Every structure is written in C-alpha cells, then in structure tokens.
Image 1 (cartoon, rainbow, N blue to C red):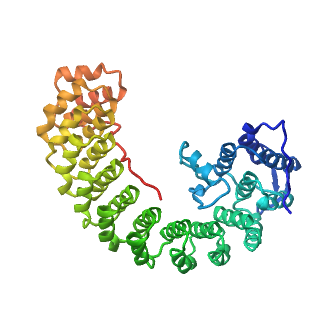
Image 2: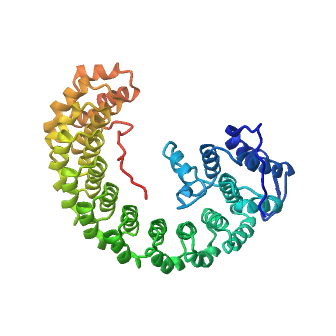
Length: 478
C-alpha cells in the first residue's frame, strides 16, 4: 500500500524545491565500504523525505513542476524531461519553456538511499497524488553508479507488472531515468501494455538505454495507434546506432498523419546519417503543411553531407512562410558550403523581414568559401540589428573581397558594437589599413581588444585577437 500524507495548513509550498535540496544534499552523508556500497545514511534524511512528500501532497502543479525540475537538475544525463508521459507532464512543459535547457555534466546527483528510504519512495509510485508520484520517481532515479542501482532497477522492473497503471507508468519513467541495460527485455514486453502512457515511456526508456536488442520492438511501436508512442519509438530509433530502421523512418516521414511524428522522424534520419533519405527530406520540406516538420527537414538536410537537397533549401529560404524554416534553411546552406547559395543568401540579407533569418544568412555566406561578396552582405553592415551587423562583418572578414574595403572602412567609423568593429578591423588590417588617423583612433579606444588590434597593426601583423566568430543559431530539438 502507498503511504498517504495528510495536508497541512502550515505548509510552506514555495519551499518544496529547497526541501528537496536539503534531503538530497546537505544531509546526504553516507558511510561506504571500499567498493562504494552504502552502509549507513543519516537517519534524519528519511524524515526529510517523508516531510517532502507530505508537503507535496496537494501542492499547486507549478510548484510541483519546479520541485521535480530541481530533482532532474542533479542527474548526469541530459533530456530526462522528455519522457512521453509523467504525472506532471503538462506542468513540466510549461516550466521548461521558461528555463534554460542546459544541464550540468559530471557525477552530480549520485545519491545513496537506505533500504527504508528506497522502500518509502517505491511505495509512493501508486500514490493518488501526482506530485508525490513524480517526486518519488525522480528522487529514486538520482541513485547512480552504485551497487544500490541494481536493486532499484530490479524493483522497478517488478513494478512493471503492477495492476495499477500509475505504478507501471512511474516504473517505466524510473527505468528511463536510470537507464539500466538489464531492463531491456522487460521494457520490450511493456511495449504491449494496455496503457498508451506506459507504452510511450517504455519506448522512451529503451532509447535512453541504447540497447540494439530493442530495434525490432521499437520498429513495431512506430505503428502504434497512439501518437505519443510513435513519437517515443521514432526518437528512440534515432538514438540507436543502426541503419536497419532507415527505410521505416522514411515511411513515417512521408506517411504518418501526425506532424509531431513526422518531425521527429526527420530528426532521427539525420541522427542516423541516412543519406538515402535526402530525397524524402527535400520533398517533405517542399510539401509538408506543418512548419515544425519543414524546419526539422531543413536542419536534417544541413546535417547530411549531400547537396541533392540544395534546390529545396534555396526555395524554402526564398518563399517559406515560417521565419524558423527560412532561418534553418539558411543555416543548412551554410553547413553545405555550396557556392550556389551566395546570391540568394545575399538577397535574404536585404529583403527578409526577420532579423534571425538575416543574421543566419550572413553567417552562412561567410561559410561558403567564396571570393566575391554579394552586395546584400555589404548592405547588412548598416542593418538595424546589431547581431546582423556583427555576422555580416564577420562574413566579410572571411571572404576578404578587396572591393568591400571602402564600405567596411565607412562602417567601422560609425559602428559602436565591439564584436562588429573587431571583425571589420580584421578585414581592414588584412589589406594593410594602417593609416595614422585610424591607428590613433584605435589606440584611444575604450575596448581593450580594439587597442590590441591597433598595436598589432603597428607591428605589421594582421591577426585580430580574439577572433570574432559568431555561433550559428538554429538547432531544433526533437
């Protein structure tokens, strides 16, 4: 039976995330044997966990989502919030949109629980309160790289056979977070579970475990009647290092009725380096009604080392209604280093109304290894957006077209942005721009990087340090 926790009028719900930190960090003092096995943990922490779960009962969903996110932040592996179905899925997605997606690497979050603590958390997998279930799973999943992990994973596998669907859902979530390789067979069996949320979590967990034995079961799951299961299965196949699923993934990209499934199929094909899918990706970029699918197809075409989709990328940059699709198409053209894109990228720099498209088009132009700068790139030196000016200046410093020197010299005199000035200076110095008036101005600059460049110019050196390189922006995640 699950442990029930009565609501308390004195509860401080906003302290939930900090209560979690208290019970997993400051009180997590464990004595260990030589092989790392926990032999004793402060008894106070069991009380802390009980208090945390008591406070969680009936808490507002946003507070619970933040507490769950706090637990997740301790885990060493990325993307643990992308499980298809969790007790607080909707609240987690809302919270995720407002928080940085970056995770800390390393071994943070390796927590040792006593047997009593583990049992307390496992019992609450079937708690009727969603917040208690979510926190119980995520707390338990923070145990990593210890002999305790084997026992926990075995307990989770056992709960895959529970009558209660919430327990099975929590168990698949926990196995995905822990990713134990000995759970593959059990999770494959769960792909036939009556509950779609359990099947989806099982497919997601198999992708995180990354065991080739799951290939056949995941390919079958791509035909599941529930779109969440299909999305999870396709994502998992993109994480397996196997080309056997490529043809099936192409079929999903071309024929699945749900945009979210088609989108993740495009991502999976790029992850598998499926050059045979370029034609299908290009056709989908041209014809799909969903902007998210088209964006991912453009990104996948940029990832694959093939120029067969160049015409569709050019067409998407020119006329797609979605700024995200146009920007990702510009990025892909830069990735492919195809000189045929130079004129259209230059055109986008002067005609596109979206600053993200213009900035990425400037970056992409600098990637093409061309010798003649398109006129649009020179015009972008006076763009209203400073990021566009910076990337255009950088691209011109890469191309080194001597005909652009007067325009760059004029822009340099008016530019206030440090990064753009350094990029412009890089081009000017490469063509021997060392006039007395210029160098005097540079030596008096409040920007130390600009002053350093002036000294280098006086010494007859053309290198600007640090080298101003703008990072490309698009990176659609599955």
